[in-house]
Length: 443
Image (cartoon, rainbow, N blue to C red):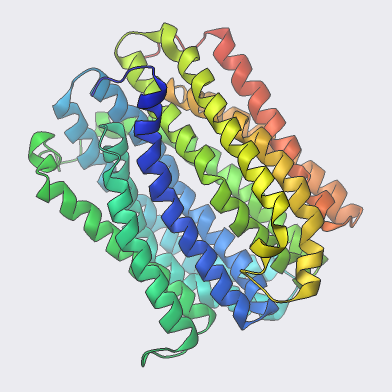
């Protein structure tokens, strides 16, 4: 429950998270590869619809990060009942937000796609996909609440088990429902959406089954506080709401980026979807280490040891940067092999190569900036993260508007927007940590 500042401790926390993140990314690669075999159009439509769902998922992800900070703080303080109170109330808050997201999607998504995209066929395919895909959000929200408990309380190994079951189901139903194998109907792009919903239901079921099998529900009184406690809800929202808005800005900016890319044409959008899949996979090491940084910083502060915050962040930044550099070497040595996973089109592969060179460099910067930003999250002052994100996204979108929309530049110049984003994130996060303004903050 009380963590130490050692490389072994970092790996002990980050390792299972990394494994848990690898499995969904393998699924996303498989999903994109299957859809890519349907054709360039399906690959493009899947890219824009997938980013939209990712925007909705950021509600769950923001709550997950906020709950993780709070649970880790209670773990550092050895407050078991406090963990149960947070968990029970967090689930109810999560289900409320997922219901709002479903309602918003069903009512507004068709109008939004029609006003922002140019290709009517891509609009129709994206709307059809998202109307199925959005029903997985409540189960994903519940899964994220369970994962926040597992990470924050030091049981992160469970994430690997839940993810394994989830992705086995996803890959199986991707194969059978997209192409109509083993007696299942051939649903094409909508088959990928249906498979993802089934997988999220499975992951949620496994995660909560383990809570009961391991008797964590008794040890931490996880379901003993089902009556809403508004002071706890306010505490959850005080930490999580800035993160939710922050992540909505972050992925919302990325969604606008893909809309700009769609204006360049179907082919650049298809290429960008492949690139998102590749670097989503290789970015898992950074995000696993960032999650570990979040938890460890909060836990150490809860122990009353704020002087250890910088040693933790420095150690994790070193590990993250090392993983990113190794990834860059692998991707630049074997770009054709990686791209052949998604398509056999020589034109698509040729178009993607310059962008791969650009993204590998920005990924090293991301490996440093994302960990430093997670260190700020761990201090509990999530409002500074929101301000940082807003400034970074504004800079990102200004670049996109100038380089993509106005100058109509080549695709690899468009992906250069990542440099602007991560430089701003790192600069403000590092300044805040060095200022010491986070010391003494209670959550």
